[in-house]
Length: 633
Image 1: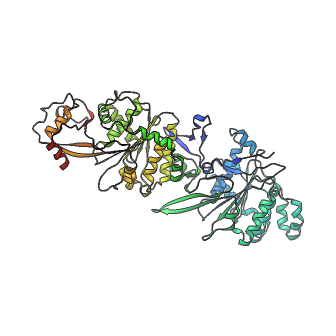
Image 2 (image 1 turned 45 degrees about the vertical axis):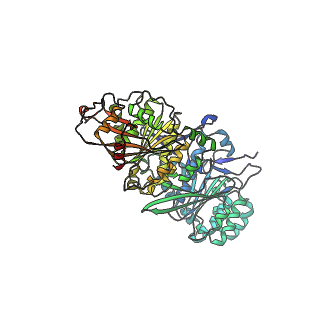
Image 3 (image 1 turned 90 degrees about the horizontal axis):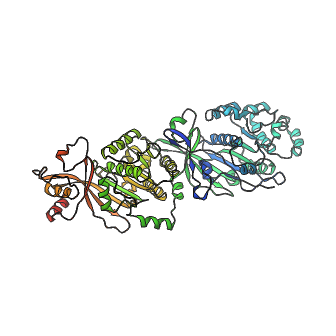
């Protein structure tokens, strides 16, 4: 019986997330429809679940799916082919895989053959060991006098080729015919011709390994073939197949033009590399996938050996790793009209009860009618305007009292510094409620400065969001220190869609976010695209008031303020928060005074009865002269 929609799940580039420094397999939730959560293997995700195999049965064998891995030297082609073999072999031994999938792929275990025309078998196995600790258990130097080992990768390298005769002749002819017969061709049909034409080659063709017909065959590489032989060679592969399900060809790409193989193969995976700011970047692109859907575009590729996996990136292990493009993430969050309308109706509304919130937040919420839920708010202004303090205070209130989980994306403060700042704010503001569990219900995502690509940045953020989503609670995000982007992460700053893409993805997840930037000369006018995307924009700027107007404003909300305090002063400078834009039809222009009373402040010298952040709306009681003075300053 033919099996339909059988797939090879490559299990390449398994994503992991970190919980208190411990890596665990990242998963995509099955959602409310009852589907099981699935692990994330990025190469399979790019193929929408794996490589589709043609229907196949013993009575009705189909031609194998042909995969071409192409690209310039040094792009990682052989490494990808090696890992593909390793992951398939280990997957066949994994009993936790879905039984229907195993049955669809045919009888277990599979046999795999890796043929290299330019590297000795032991060198190939040594290379595999540099990526996979148990490589010796899976990669075996093939002996032409023995059968292929079940569920193991037999490796035939140049050392075997040299045993059979001159390299120039054997590689050219032996590769064509040995691979042809290994695919299950009618051996008797060609044996007479081989014995007559070349006794050296006949020794290889009559060996057990040539008769094994592996389910997966890798030929590395096809560059030894002359251009005119390519078509004949490829047709023999496909016509000769009886058991083989997948053939993988490795080929160094030509500098100009397309080659025959790119047209003939079912799947073409192109690897490449570029230099950006002298930073070496590998890329992977699925050029085509005949008979199945796939993700378009170039995706970043990295290769981690055993010696670098622990320190090179926090969310992946050894081997190949793929960081999907920003466009991939954006395609996941194309919002429907219904969801967009739902979000629009919630702009300006905060459904949480704020009677137990810090007074500064209560006053600010009254002025702006609440932060837009599931949308983006921008805090911009001069340095020292208490923007970060207000952002942290809002996030902590959501996590401790509103059943939210929180994520801090920090471009400046590392995890310990950000955590220390939040603990100080909790104490200073005397916040009550359930304290957050750092690393679990409240995560700090810190990026070390360097040539981090936008794809790497997005990937870490996406995994953190997925982990928090699994808790089935609303998510609030604070993106702190946007002003550090250009200096610390130049590759991200040059990507024009970087910040808008992050906001779009967070909004697609209905996450309430606050982005903090600095509105000064060294920063772009649009804040890297933040201002056009934000639904609420608050500007924090220093202004001067006459002391009488200032103290009169404070008296409106501070019952403990002393009107005689500092009455001899003529001017007082403070931070004013102004509503620049509020999407959804609300009028901008509301203003208020924001001041921080910290541990170093003498309460006898300020018009406040307690420490912490204080926000006071500026109401209409101010005189015309006072308003004119504010505008001039």
